[in-house]
Image (cartoon, rainbow, N blue to C red):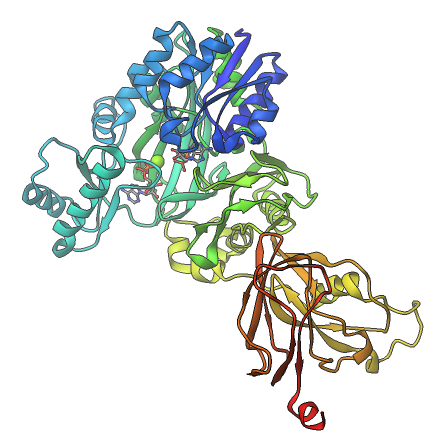
Length: 618
Ligand code: ADP
Ligand code: ADP
Ligand code: MG
């Protein structure tokens, strides 16, 4: 067995690999860029080597630097994780040439499966059913259009060098073909440096079913059953599970046999995934499942396979790379229960899924519901703009699909991250979609029904009241004079926005300045708007107090100015967020003590608004 391992990756997958390596007594060496100086994978490894500036092109994608880091630290082997250099045959070859162990398939296998057209031709020759289409050399637009007509619309144009759901165009009608081809080729040459495309029949009610395969250097190849990754957004996986809902034993047997046959055709060594596309319009049938591509690496969603088989796939990778035979034979592998994984991203579904970057001031994943969490960040860490914004994989395992689904939903709903936004609430809603609950998912589900899932959640009145009482209101002794007259609405700030919250009872202020409100996988910060205890629910005296310590970054009004209710008065920057303070009612700015750039303490008087009748009496 190897004794030391350099992990040429970052984030959750680097941490995942380090975990198994440490358990096996292997010395681990992390690599990191400028942006990752404080990253979790750097802290978890025995040693870490700096490999360059933040952009991946200047660090994680520079093969020579990684090999130099391995030599400098005396690492015996290199594990590439997924993404980055994991499917780069040239890099794999340089690792071998440098006398190091490559934890992955032979470079020739990577090359054989690297381009989608060549892979399909190879698979067709090996007798594996492939998605019908054109995969030849001729790239003449008029010729390709003719081929598309022969295949029959709708068709999919795919960059042969594509990956990660990029470089694909669905074409519904012949009139749109030429434009779609040109745009696909442009994207392909910009993203992958290769404009070559293939044309495929677009499968109806498509389901993405893939098979985990594993080979060793002694000629053994096994499969570890299938995963279903049909819940996708823009051809990218969102939730994955194993086994596939609705899969029967005969279909599974023929699908897994095809996968093993595919792996044998390229003398496969190590962990690999054969991806298939299935026409799910009449359930899963062996004659309606076709080879799509092979990923010659560990897959993001490998944990669901680990959960149902009890196999640590990274351990198998390290054993196979060390020359050992596969730890188990096919007959020794079986499916136990059901597992489901969700990819938790730092992104804002309400803003078109834009990455949400910044410091993770609050990071709670899983809500104490058990299950497995594979993460690469910790509270206080950063989500940087340089890399993929996935912050964790949340994984549930149960005796039944329904148990796994419920646990995963509970883990996500109990998660709380702030001020970075995540897709947790989107995932909770996706898991509750009736078609998903029924196991009847095709890749178009989110495209059709995703809008409602992306709507930002709002905390319920009950949750807000609880948080607000914690923040600023002590209820009188239990059982003492709690009556309807004691219910009042008081103003607070929820992530800087005005919100009225009902408080019950009477009491005194708590000095705490801010609390987190968490619900449905989302977190907000609730702050006191100003004192209100004396006013019993009345609007108050118009004093604009700083809700927390911070800095004034904008003042929108002048002393003596007339303002209307809700008008922006000034902006405070606090805890890395902007909070806009607005006029509580129509009136006049009677006092203004805030100046741009000033640091202010919590409760500092920034301005005072007076109502028109008060002005008259003065
Ligand atoms: P990538 O390399 O980007 O992963 P794939 O070829 O694996 O590309 O396709 C990505 C996704 O696109 C699939 O998971 C599936 O949702 C969709 N897709 C690919 N080919 C087809 C097809 N022929 N018909 C319908 N959907 C397809
Ligand atoms: P899989 O096919 O393994 O399910 P995807 O194709 O969706 O996964 O995602 C793999 C891709 O995700 C990589 O090719 C890379 O572009 C991106 N990626 C995500 N997270 C990382 C990471 N931590 N490091 C490198 N690449 C990543
Ligand atoms: Mg794919």
